[in-house]
Amino acid sequence: MPKNESLSLDYIRKLYAVQDALLADIDETLHKLGMAIHIGAEEGRLLQLLMGLHGVKTVVEIGTLAGYSTIWMARALPPGGHLYTIDKDPEYITMARRFFDQSDVQDRITPLEGDATKILPSLAGKAPFDMVFIDADKPGYNGYLDWAENNIRMGGLIIADNTLLFGSMGLDAPPDDIAPATWHGMRRFNERLADPEKYFTAMIPTQEGLTVAIKLF
Image (cartoon, rainbow, N blue to C red):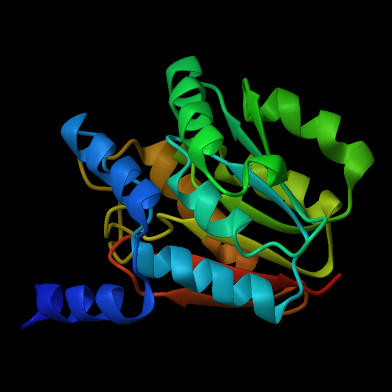
């Protein structure tokens, strides 16, 4: 860990990414359940900034968990904006609904329970969307990108978390604790977004890797 990394992160969060009581409650709940795998507050604030810069009004989120990132993004939507969030785990959706009901953006969020590969085609009639945020099962990332290529508007955002795959992307081969198909799949996902003919992309070197791409076609 770089020197003073945790102190710097605490400073950034206190200054620019303050959690309100609801977000803090979600964070604490997930920590108690041993499921604190959501984005950080600083990443939630970054998503809000990107949404504001790109005039995002409609979002599809793949991977809800308890709705922590969902609420960050929904709060950045303008009047009339909407966010669809998908998760296949009924326990996660139930937990997220409880937090959404306590939020100030409940009317901007539609939670959808089920396999994203089956739900995403049903959203095609509402396309094109301004943004997709992918933070779900890693083997599914390329399939989600296939959908995004057809349903995110030109100039829209494709953002994905965990794209460094637990720090393994810089290795020459998959480590023992990551399935080779998952490792090669994430390599392929990153390489697809590196195509300058189709995307203007940067990977932000957060601990897990956050890829931000503008769709050029």
